[in-house]
Amino acid sequence: MPKLNGKVAIVTGATGGIGAATAELFLREGARVVLVDLQPEPLQALAQRLGDGAAPFAADVADPADTEKYVAEATRRFGGVDVLFANAGIEGAVRPLIDCTVEEFDRVLAVNVRGVWLGIKYAAPEMAKRGGGSIVITSSVAGLVGSRGL
Image (tube, rainbow, N blue to C red; front, side, top):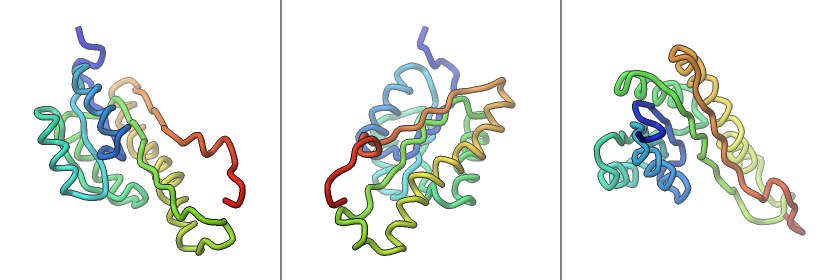
């Protein structure tokens, strides 16, 4: 029996390499998956490639209303949420920190930190209704080691 049979997963950052591979694995293991990313066209293409059980949802993970909507879509379409794979993230400008604008810095924090928090904020109550679930947050090794000048 597949490990995720009957489970519902949300994958943010779904159109990137890690997100797409995770969504594919979750589907293979029996889950139904809401694919979340910013651009609708790549989402549609991914959902078509993955087939039944994959539902695309274009959203900005840093926006509370969008986040609430993608969680609601998982619940409406598939009956709840069991897994949040919080994978959406951006690198931001690759240059010395002192040369970055406040807006660039704020956007990185909004996606990489606030987006994860919002996902948990809205998905966790839906998971609790089903008796619990799993939250997986990806990050970059760049968060553990510094790079000169950056």
